[in-house]
Length: 94
Image (cartoon, rainbow, N blue to C red; front, side, top):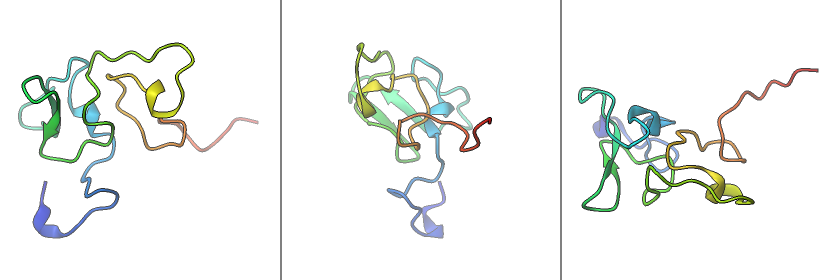
């Protein structure tokens, strides 16, 4: 992911929401566009980018009732950059 172009904020991630490059089971949708994927042998997400979510959270993880913050994010959820751990618009309907 072009590390020769300098450090990318935060945590040297090159793409936000890079979990979306893999299907719900953690396999890349496209080998050519694979950024992060689940490695069963290592028990973590690996790839060409720094995962923008917990690297050891299995793709099949489902949040228990009442879970808060990062624990409430499922293993197949690609978004973590909002304070509630979800993607969303900052615009609110009146």
